[in-house]
Image 1 (cartoon, rainbow, N blue to C red):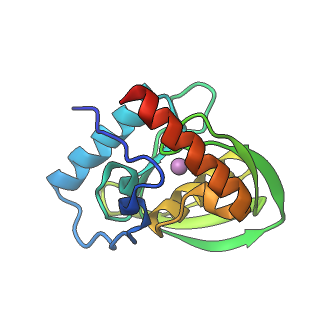
Image 2 (spheres, protein in one colour; image 1 turned 135 degrees about the vertical axis):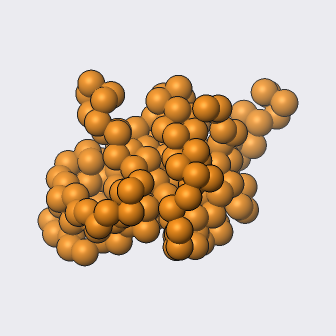
Length: 167
Ligand code: NI
């Protein structure tokens, strides 16, 4: 297993739309394991393949307090969504930035697991937020793009400053 480098906003590669997974092979299983390790190490509660510059529909999530409820989702699709919640979000690709985003309160997501079995997850609260946030990544969207243009501009200049300091 190995830790993977995470792309940082506004890297243009974060805008790529991920392709559907056609076959679940050893390479994909290794990527899923490495993504989980990278997410736990960061630490974060979700990571999309897009964020590690792999443009396939694969996400890992663990929104549990005990950090032992790993979900690996291949080709996730939102089947149902309802309600509204506003939650403060962060992202491993946007370090140090947190802001409120409005999302559905509940989602039902269909996906394939690592064995290729069809599954669904019916989620509310934090897990529902996390699913929507990670599925956005697969479509080339970072959470800050839900914010106003003014906020996005502030975030870009703050991150550019951080990059200069750490470079
Ligand atoms: Ni994110």
